[in-house]
Image 1 (tube, one colour):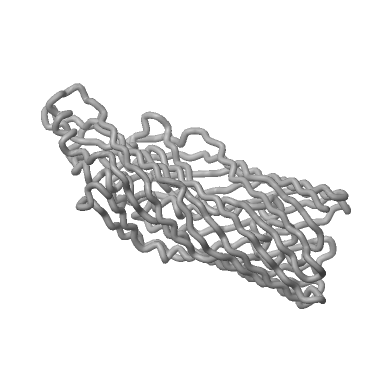
Image 2: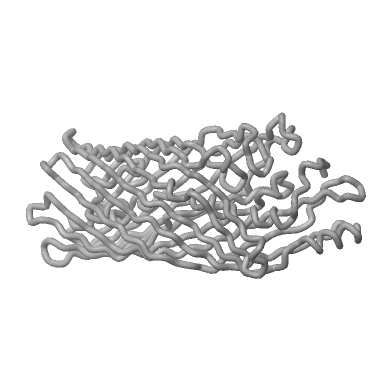
Length: 430
């Protein structure tokens, strides 16, 4: 193992840093909640013509004058590479370190039913946020993060109403969100007897499934048969997590050193923290002025600036509590999509997007090495009688992101990430 005196930090402080890092995962928002919408690059808030409108623009379910069930999910895989900073004593010369291979499948399910001629009710289940950064064995940054796993699921009942001429629709619904956080990292310390650095403990944080309430609302306006405008808003939400921080010592073989480590490690204990999820505002315009084409452009404002700090409470040793300044920024994403009606039964879809990341450079760590993203999508849709089938291939490229020597844990380097996503939905109309 490499040796450097710069790695010696108080063990309690390292454990607290591990727990506070949970908030970085909240920045990983997911919008892949309907294969048709994903096929149009996520530009769907002014189209909103299938039950996934409950997520993209709830007003859109008012224009759906039939009952429908829609179920599916998105399979997500990541390919990433970390290269160390040649000026960093700890990471210089490190290349080719990656995540463990995982396939993540955020599911979605929707049901809508019209009531009379102007009202539609529905319910949706989707996963608005998620994160898994699980590094391969032997990962040099294990003292920053080995594994981060943040899961959410939302349930939203919804109702929408449209005018008799169908030109204006409004909709809204409450959102019940549950979430869980699991984090793992190692603790390093210098052995004063031989000057070498050892992995002396693992810190494992596992929260309960905790919950909160928010809401969603939308408006759809059709001034003419060929133009549509949509506005959709999803409220901010805060989930207060309670769980357990389990501290497991790793014996080094040196009894004296192990005794010193044991005296400094905090005990396994309950912890409490909060994640502040942002609100989202969609502004969208769509047109079908070109025969057989539906084209849409969306701008999405992501209100990450409400995430200014994170306060972590250790309930057995409260003096070790920690507050960390984060200073995330509001961001915008831009989405362009098109749907081409090829035959009465078949559609083909195209999309492109640019998504600005909210992290300041000091927040770029192995737990969430986020970067500006560019993506392209290609999808097909089949609908015949009561049956529907949609599938989309989505290629997402993260721009190369370096820490420029500013990482607060002293772990500097450059991250390169790409993702591949395949969305699939099956539907039945009745």
